[in-house]
Image (cartoon, rainbow over all chains, first blue to last red; front, top):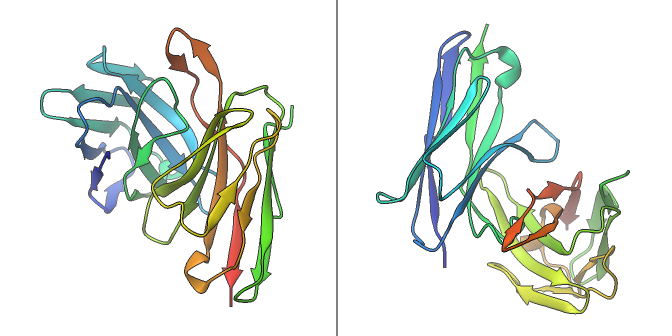
Length: 113
Length: 116
């Protein structure tokens, strides 16, 4: 089955700096790569996703890049704000069923004011 | 639209007891899943369903049963609770777009289960 590794497990940045979280996956058949943000005590919520036919996707301060050859994808957050502090999860799966994904172990991002 | 609703939000069980975690969605989504989340770990897939009457095992299915008699509901049953099942449980649903695609997964608010 699929195996997803996520690094780093914790990340602390100053407000305004950029944050980068990286994930690798093992199953070359995976073609859907979502990123979720989970605030303390709340449900995971999708912040951005990318499908395998695209190398990069951007949404305001958030971007995701995908390297299918190397089987890794990354989340980039620019101009970080304190409200970006949360746990971020990457996942990999099939675009035919987004609810059947394999998740990384999460990155706790802390943005210091 | 309520989205994905899970009940209860909190539950304490004694070892050996049984219970059912409820999950309902009102978005007419075909796909539904159950995940568990343990401290310091990501979400691990327990069971999933691609439609009424169809279920399959995920990564960690042992100790859990599911059924899908309607599109809206996907209950998760613990037949004999064990302390190792102490976790936060999330239900998720997504919509088939046809042509081999689906929408993102929408998560319920979670059920925090403690087995003592």
